[in-house]
Length: 420
Image (cartoon, rainbow, N blue to C red):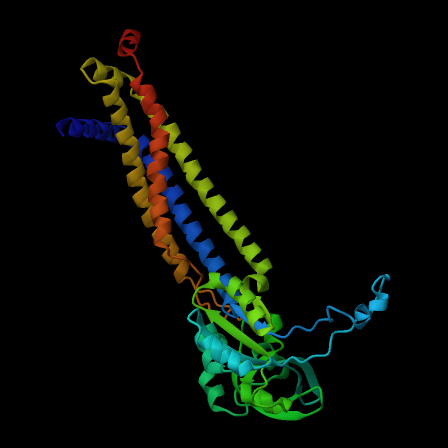
């Protein structure tokens, strides 16, 4: 214990007598770790915001009937033509319906499944929005608005009105904010919708919806399931889509294949629906971590250079230590202690700077009409980044200090003293 205290005391003396070099080395670690914490917190926060913007509005599994041609054409069934070369052109989609067969029993089955967080019915109707002499094509979605709010946070994107207002209204509509701007409509106004068959229905605007995606906001609106069924002249069991949210996202792919086989409907999982988006997210994360690791490595090289120079400046001290009975191992421990002290002190200060800058960015106002749910810059305050930062500070200073310390361990004190 006394020997350890002596080694640490000598290491501290070396650091204090060369305070300029010590501070420079510590600042290299500080700014490297601080920049790493700030960058990785901001970039991962931004990526998480973009992910949530898409994934919050995407069900884990989407059940619907696909419009597609028949796999086996009538001509293929003629045995007399089985040996001939058949070419069938301009194949039309097979006759079918968009309605999901036995949709209500399927919903009941899904809601009783332990893997399912919730399942909601939906009706997608192609309509025309009418305002004066203007008309614009779009989509009216019939939803169970309270369940949609619970499962997909749709209420976060309703910038005027509320989900409860639509739930209470039999002829209400939550209109896309882009549509409202085009037609100069506001909360409480009425808009007419027309079906392709020619029927016209007036609806009261009880909410405005803004997702941040212009293509959706300029065409999408929401009404109750019963309202859309009445507009389309369909019975109460008419459901075109079922959206499923799971407790575990990883279960989406196998469960989608299971539901396709069980109910003979098309089941699109979230990975299939957002394949390109997930690729972009992976690339952004890769760039973020690559830049962050580069900052840490650059800081490590700075520590190595400074410690290397410190050993050359301390040649006489090393010779005296060895001449007075200190072993090469003791000298090695002295310089390794210096490196770890620099790494620990600079790393902790870097964590404080990174923490402060991250919270400063998080408090800066960031308001845009395209992202109504965001009021400040997104920052991810994950404690794991701080553990990585201080861990890398210690590891990098250990590696950076090992080689110079090993060189100091091998120094022959006789040659140093003779040279002087």
